[in-house]
Length: 303
Image (cartoon, rainbow, N blue to C red):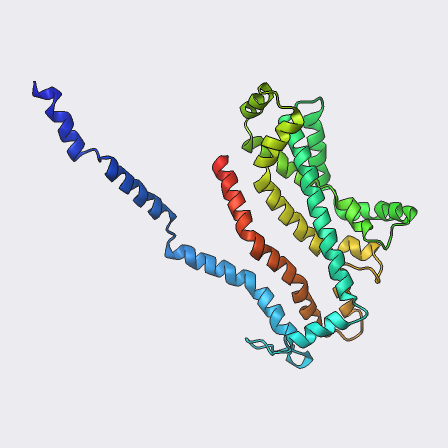
């Protein structure tokens, strides 16, 4: 009978695309899905202008002088380098010592938070121990306590230890982060299936080796973002360093606050210093942004 031979061939030729057509169609759908519309570009342009305008306006003020403060115009006045040199050479600011203090304290805090949060997040996400859920709730609840409530007892503690005025007074309280623990716990719960851990244990891997070969590898995208968040937070921290550090050993935000301690405040000098303090963060985003995005996308695909 012809029913068993011709009809299936007709269906294949007319209704069902062959392998080449399916591949071409899938490629077309994928390209169409990735192509943004004009409104997406318009929306991104508006967000970019709204985000970059405060920085550009600060640069306009920082490139002028006291006479151009009321009307800075739309283009830089050309005095930014002179204003920046005044900030760097001001003996009251101690710019280079403050820059070094900000760099190594921010790096040390970010590295410590990433390591401690990854270890704690792995324990809360993948280990079963008594009181684990309650302890995680307690850690998360500490984020609701304002920093201002702990300033007085913390200052008394460091005064008793004789650490006030030293850069360690801002590093030690920030070596761990409740937000970091919560962040890594939630990520590792989703990124690492329990079956993978059981397979590693059946192959004879210890808990430490399982963490190093499975957990640490899977946690790299979230750890990269946590490092960035923590570094920016530590770099911009002003409240606690302003209280506990002296003026001879400041961080960069504390040093810049000394520019406006007189009766007359030259905002062109102040904002020139603010621009100088922002440049390291911009360089961090420029050089590490691609790796961070690649890590996030890799983690999303694996998840």
